[in-house]
Image 1 (cartoon, rainbow over the protein chains, first blue to last red):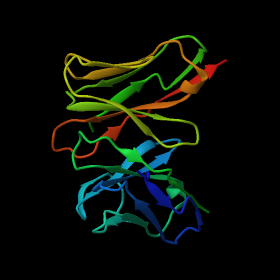
Image 2: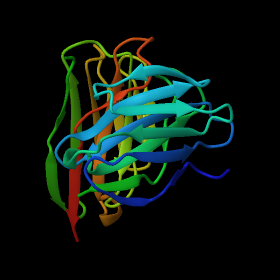
Image 3: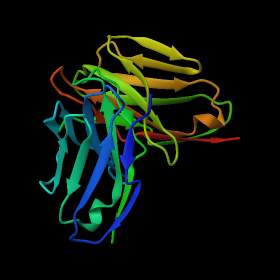
Image 4: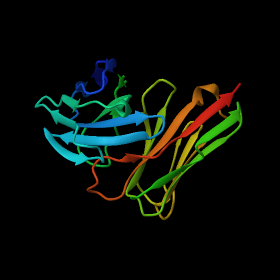
Length: 114
Length: 112
């Protein structure tokens, strides 16, 4: 099976712009979670989608949003980018919803905001 | 908020030495998962522990879940340079918590 794929892998944006990141989960996986990873804050949970519905949300401002499509692919959007949004954005897919499902991570999208 | 402390933050060992990282919670956990992230890579699932006092082994890695389900440990016997990376524990507090929250990780470096 192909693993989790994320596009693009690298992105450079300017403050105030918006960005959309894409994640394709492992075939058959229906849950997609998004994380922000920075050296200072570690792995921070953004949100989780299952069956096209947001099931959990982390403590991030409303500038961060996401959605999931009927084929389980997911996108996350960050509007009005700030310098502090520079990070590695990781997507993880799971077979199902819930805490007992192991997560499979994609390679991430490295976002740099200048 | 509900915190899980992962210690130590960094560990430097000589190849062949043992290594242990700990996850400690002030409240009872539903389960705990361990992940490894190699430098420049992404987290990779290692193991999940669910039962009180559970012990699982993967070759040189031993994972334990405390009797009170408030702490967990990962022990590596006779480290190798391939063990280099950051080890994260991820925990949930109840069955409706959805996906887990990650600890800050322990970064292991191994000197050959």
